[in-house]
Length: 286
Image 1 (spheres, rainbow, N blue to C red):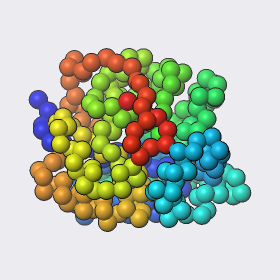
Image 2 (cartoon, helix red, strand yellow):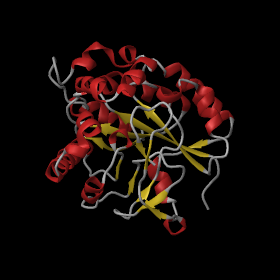
Image 3 (cartoon, rainbow, N blue to C red):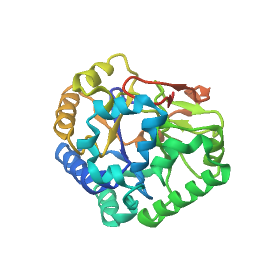
Image 4 (cartoon, rainbow, N blue to C red):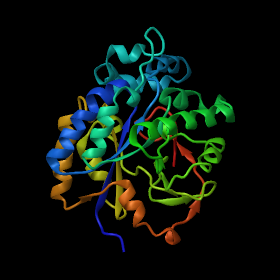
């Protein structure tokens, strides 16, 4: 039987700045609290500057950028990568930092090759583009960690049937691609989905909102964390949150630890749906 009151930290690294500055800050925070997390890394180009095109396509994106104070979160250079400035590689630029994550006992999994292109353009891309995206990302993960990834967490919690069919080709043990309320077996891949079922700081702007969302949750919760956010201007709030949660007798566990103890026979088999969640500018898989 699974223990009660367990939380997993799903730490997404989406940008060069998040890798360079946010990850070391988060490692220091986790070390101070004696906690382990699951880092989902983006390996390839940081083309964050292409997000400017969303200002035309999606008015909600501008509201999100203003509400989250994106200029302070990401900085001016990040806003120009892939347009006026070349796209630097993200995790590939910091092999020593990837080793440090591993050496300190954290889980490292595959998040993205080019995060921005997946997030903005996936529906219009070909199956061959998706295949190549996975091949580049997984090869990069293997190059830096010495092993194949055991999990995939989709950028922006965005998937489609073509991407799911591509996931079937790889030896993943679990997925973390959705904001569903509880784990389930994803129908196309046959893999267990371990969802991020708590809100994050960039969505709520409030520690209390995250704490209140814990009420009524099942035995295992996943808190989505972003290196650029909780490893940046929200670091102090994140540390206060960890302190509060620990005093509530929650135990922290990596997602792979949870997967090893997960009884798949007790899970329903379902497909992803999509929903626009509070604080987000585009629908997420649920």
